Amino acid sequence: MTLAAPHINTKNTLSLGYGDHLRFSRLIQKRYGLCFPEKRYPDLERGIRQAFAASTCTDLNEYFDLLQDPDHGAAHFERLINALTVGETHFFRDAGQFDALYSHALPQIIERRRALRTLRIWSAGCASGEEPYSIAISLRQLLPDVDEWSITILGTDINTEALDRARKATYGEWAFREERAKQWQPHYFHRRGKRYELVSEVRRMVTFAQLNLAEGVYPAYETNTTLMDLILCRNVMMYFPEPVTRQIVERFYQALTDGGWLIVGHAEHSLITYQRFQTHNYPNAILYRRADHSSFLPKDWHWLILPPPKEEKPAAPTLATPLDTQPISQSPPGLPQNGQPNDSDPIEKACDLLNYGHSARARDLLLKAIEQNPRHAPTCALLGQAYANLGYWQEAEYWCRQATRMDKLALKAYYTLALVLQHQEQLDSAITAMKKVIYIDRHNVLGHFGLAHLYHNNNQLPQALKSLNNAYHLLNGRSEEKVIPDSGGITTASLRETIVRQQQLWSAEANNELKIERTGKGTDDGNSGLES
Image 1 (tube, rainbow, N blue to C red):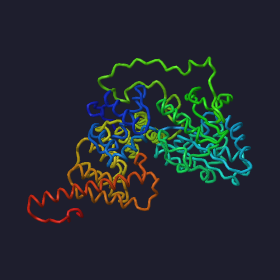
Image 2: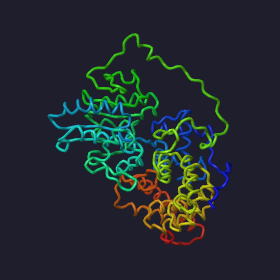
Image 3: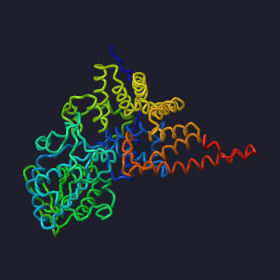
Image 4: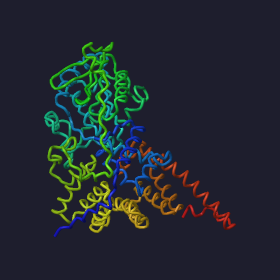
C-alpha cells in the first residue's frame, strides 16, 4: 500500500500575474543588473516561488516590500538572487574551448610567464567551481614544476550558495560527463560514497569570492581582479542587458595584461562587443586576446552597429499559468533530454534538481520514489520542500507531516512545515513546529532566526527578541563568508547584519510599547519581560 499524493488545489497556490513579473524583474535589474525579459519569466517565477517559500511573508506584496526594506531585506534578497542564478555546470565543459585552452592559450601564457613563474587566472561566474578547478587540473598536467609557480586562480560568482558548494569541492557522477573529465577523474578525485572529492593539491590552487559583475568594483587590487593573464566568463553576460555587457567587457579588457586572453560562451559572440580584442579562431572555439590597440571594423561591416529592429510586445496575460503546468520545450541546462541527471539514486537526483531550481521535476521524481518506498521519511521531507517551492501549501504540509510521523527527528521537515504554516497564516502551529527544530538541534541558527520572526508576527515581542539574540550568539566564531546550511546561500556576514538591524528596530519597538504601557497604566514595570 502506498501513500496517495493529495489532489492539487490550484486555489491554494502562489500565483504571479504579469504585473508581478514586471515589478520583480525591474527591481532585480535595478539592484543587480540581471535582466529577465518576458521570455525568461518562467525562470523568474521559479526563483521567486522558491525564495518566497523560504520567507515568512504571507503574500507577494509583503515579500516585495521586504526585499526593498533597507533594514530587513538584505538576507532575503540574497536568497532570491541565489534562487534566480542557479547554474549547473561540469568539468571541462565545452570540449572545443578546453582543447583550444589546453593546446594554445595556456601553453602561450606559460611560456610568456616562465621567467617569473607567475600566473593569474579569473573564472568570472564560476558557479559550483568546476571551471576553475578544471583550469587548475589542466595546469598540473601542463606544468611538471607547478608547485614551484605562484599561481592565482580566482573564482567569483554572485551566488553565495554555489560558492559554498565550490569550496566543498565534492561532486556527483554527472559532473564528469566530458571525456577529459572521465580520463583524469581517477588522478584528481577520491571517491566518497556516491560523491567524488577533489584532492587537496588542486583545491588549494583556487580561491573563491562573491562578486557582482554588474558593479564597478573591478579591476581593483581590493577584489584581486587586476593583471590577469586569462579571464573566463562563459554563459554569464547573456543575462545582462547590452549596456551592462559592454561595461563588463570593458572592465575585463582593463583587468587583463597585454596579450591576456578572454573566453566567453558561444552565445555571447559579438564582433561589436569584443572589437577591442584580437579574435583567434580554433576548431569549435573562438578566443579573444587583448591587443595594444583596438580592432576597427571594416567599412562593409557597418551594418553590424545599426540598432536592432524593435520587437512587437505581446499582450500581457491576465493570469500567470502555474509554473509546473507550463509546457517545457527542452531540458534545463546541464540535463540530458529526458530531464534527469545521469545518476542511479533518485533521492540524490531530486536533491540536485532542487539545488538547481527544478522543483517540479524533483517533485515528479520523488512521487515515483515514494511509490517504491512509502515509509521513507527523507523522501517525504523532500516532497514537502518541492511543493513548498512551487507554492502548493496544502500539499507541502501533507508531506512534511508524513515525514514527521515516520521520523520524530525529521528536522528539515519541521522547518519547512513551520514556514508552510506561516504562509497559511497558522502562526501558533508554525511556532510549535519551529520550536521542534530547536528541540532537535539547539544550535540551529535558522531555527532561532525563524522562530524570532514567527514570534514577532504573532505580537510576542519579548520572545522574538530572545530568539533573535540566540541566533546572533550562535553566529559567533563562524567565518563571515561561510554559508548557513540550508539557508539558500545566506552567508554568516549577511545574516549577522540582518540580525543586528532587527535587534535595533525591535528593541526600539519594545521600548515604545513599554512607554505606552507606563503612560497608560501609570506604573513602572521595568523591562524584565525582555528576558522571559
